[in-house]
Image 1 (tube, one colour):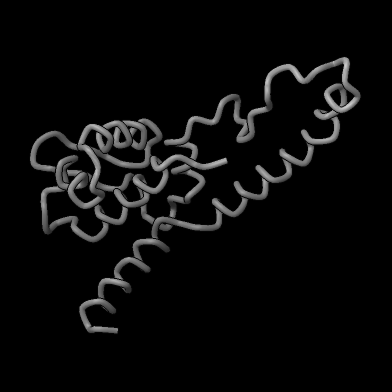
Image 2: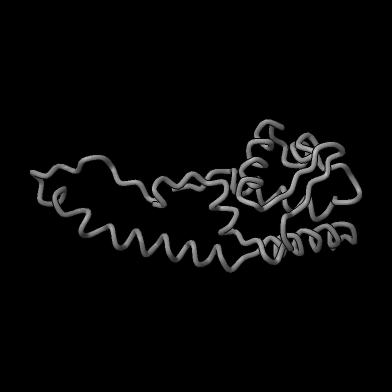
Length: 149
């Protein structure tokens, strides 16, 4: 299992908005330069974040901002906005276990509840971390870099 890079790209976008807002025009091209991905990828993620009500984008001079205070945007919010979790299930079961096999017949009974437990635990942890946490840690890392620490 691996969460796609859309998640970390989205978090990176928020860190850039926090750090560069008011100093630079924050455009998809500007963000793509920081993230080192194609601007089309950034635009797709921006549309997902906007649709989820997490960012505001104004036409014109790169006016982009968080739709609410960074303390109010969790990793879970971002995960839900940019990850494609089919039917709300993180784990996808292989198709059609063999009903003639005793393991195949019973694997869902043995595994489904555990997978749901793991997904709930992960989502609970995602709810505990905010974009403000990352923005603060990013600023601290930049300051340490500038002071040689």
